[in-house]
Every structure is written in structure tokens, then in C-alpha cells.
Image 1 (tube, rainbow, N blue to C red):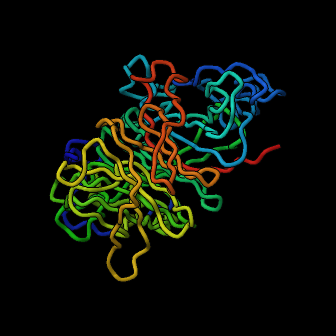
Image 2 (cartoon, one colour):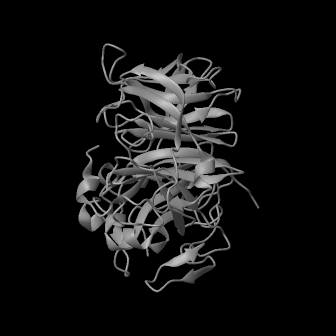
Length: 416
């Protein structure tokens, strides 16, 4: 990442940053799946008692949007995959920015979808397996400075992680200011469709790339992978290097106690934004790969829930074929340093560069992956094989241009 903050409103003098100083506590979407046909195998995404989008209980906002459950109930329940389309939402801007709302500086952001890989549709397709959960509403809740500087037009999500006790989290990327963040997402109901989802973001603290005190996630070019293991949150990086940081991929434990402190304002931040920066280092080393090897996709718990698994890719053909993505196992460190990931022997071949398996989810005990364009893979961990399970891409209009799955997680949705 280039150090573009020196040219932005959030220009930050990174020399001598004092961690914790100045603490302050603090419409329709473009990419709907195509409407499924009613069938006995699951029906439409709206419940029989609703009338589709607009039938839920919600409060209308000044710009015609709504807060809360804006659609009807969907028909999915049990263990499901929750995935995010991280492509920016404005078709008129060729999906290079979010869709503006009526209030200047506010936007409709990326969309979230529920998917049941085990559901059978009568027509043999996958439409009944998919439901639109909602889209992000990017507004003053992310800070007035972010509204005023226009940066919400380029804010997107890269990963998701859900815990029944901790809730739903995501990795954010602010394209304009070139900064990663960890966010809590506020979903009014996992039972409803077409909701507006709130965001509380904590941007990773800047620092000199050569300083050991700098958050190791700050200068990463490829943040990929987010997962809860128990009540702890873990974040994976690809290991592309750059700006003085090593080329080792890694998994970090996210210090949730820092998020509990709220946001901090620093004397050397010219924006003085009270709703932006985290109050301390968020990423704590947990597992580390050799150079040019790292998390290219996502993280998920092992079958026995005694380790984390990750989708790994190499940056050099001398390490492993460049069209191959392998499942590695990462155990908790047994000493002061990070643990060393080991291959499980399960891998997928023929994965084109740029079409990575971005989501890894264990649903019903089985491991599934989903790539950037919505192709779903099923992993047989005993046979160490991978097969194509489904293809969600055609359920999205213009999916080759407008769909970029950037992460997935397991959620549990209570039934009737």
C-alpha cells in the first residue's frame, strides 16, 4: 500500500505516535440475486406470509431508505453460509464506487447474502438456496469527517466472521485513504431480507513500517481471512510484503479488548476524527508462514475444533503451483512465538489467479469454499479431495463484472 494518507484529510505524522493519547469513547441494491421461482423445495426468498421486499417492519429515513428489517422473511434456517459481495455497489460508476444516497457523503455499500449449500431446489438450480440479507448503510455513524471527505464512496468489505456470543465482524478497506479496519456489523435480524446494515469501524493504527511498535496488519497489501475460534477473532494475511514489511503470510489474533475501548483521537492526526482510529495495536502474532506463502482465502475451524484451517496460496511457483490453493492447519502457539502452519494434504488445482477461494466455511460439519465469482467447492477432508458443489454466479446479474465474493462465515439462523 502506498502511504497516501499524507495527501489525504487523515494525513498522519507517524513519527512518535503515542498510543492511547487523547482517548474519545466513542434504497434498493444493485446486486440482488435474480428472483427464484416458487417451488416445493424451498419456495421464494420471501416467506409465505410476506409480500417480498418492503413487507418487513422498518422505519423510513429521510432519503427514502429504511432502518431495520426492510424486506420480508426468507425461508432459510439452521447452519448457513453468510457471504459478502465486496464489489462496490454503483452500476452507473461501473462498480468502482458505492451508490450515493440523498444525504451528501452517504452511500449504500456492499451486500450480504445467506446461502444453504444443503438445500435442494425442485428446478435443479440454486436459486432457492440464496437469500439477500441486506446491504451496508454508510453514513454519519462512521463519523462526520468520513462523510465530509467523501471516503465512504470507496469503503468496502473484505472478510466476515460471526460468533453467537460476539456477533458479526468484518474487515474493511478504505480505498481513498488506503487503510484497513476491523468493524462490527449491526444486522437487525438474520431472519429478514433487504435490511440496512450498520457499521462501526476501527481503523488499524498507522506507524513506521520498520518500527516493531507498528501494528503488523497496517502495511499489509493482502488482508484475507477472518474467523472466530471460540470467542477469539483471527485475521489472516497473504504475505505479499511491501513498504519494509516481511513477505511472510500470517494469522493474527485480533485484540477485542482494544475495540472495547472505543476510538482514539491523536494529536498528530490532522482530521481529529473521533470515530476512526483504534486505540492500540489490534493484530497480535499467532501463526506465521515461510516467505511468499500465506492466507489467500479464508479461515475456518478444523473438523475436531482443535485448530484453525486456512486457504493458502504461494507467490512463487518454486513453493507450489500458482494455480493451486491448499488447506493448511494452524494450532495455537505453545510458546512465546507464533506457531508454524502445516499442510493437510487437501488442495484445489486449476484456480486462476485473481479468482481465489475467498470464503471457507464449515456448515453441517462439512467444509465448503466459495470463490470470487460465486463458485462453491466441497472439501472431502478424509479423501483429501475437492469437487465443485454449486455455482451461484448466474444468480447475480452481470456477475462477471459486478460480483466479487470477498469472504464468508458460518451463521446459525433460528427456524420457525
